[in-house]
Image 1: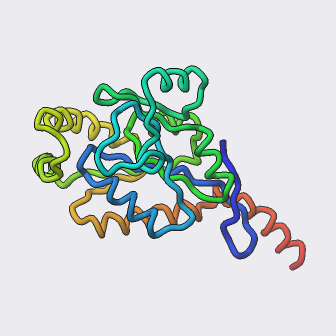
Image 2: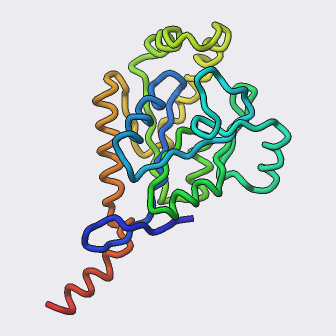
Image 3: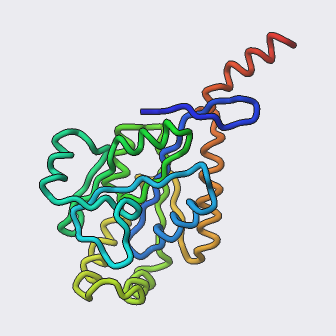
Length: 218
């Protein structure tokens, strides 16, 4: 599902990047994703569909596409998702049409998804996917962050902590692994990774023609 987009003043085309951020809940990926989107006009967020209820402060179409279970199942049957997963008794999925629309507009796509989604996306799009996993400094710090967030009852926090160990165990399925003990430093590292991945030779689809023309006119 690769798309070529303009990326260089020399007229090179490159393959669009599907940039994945994953972490246990509370490790900071959503904060870093927001900072990345604010700093990079060539990046757009993939907005997942979910069957969970909307939370205070969330906006339909910005944070999630909120759908009921029946509609979600219809989308699965219609192959409308690039990936989907069942998490904490709710379903989450990445709408295929939205991602293709972003790539066609000449922008890269940012995904805030878990290890299951990252794995499915990689199986579909392979080398166009860049996977970054963000670790907390410690499990104790992760627990404290979830408590400080004060958005979930204690039983949900306990469930998130129980799930966190399983999520961390999939760290080796990612291209990059960062420890978020300083959100600004972690954000700059993520930003550097994205910049480097955009410049990879394998993504510069216009490079061969440029070099051939250069050698022909030498």
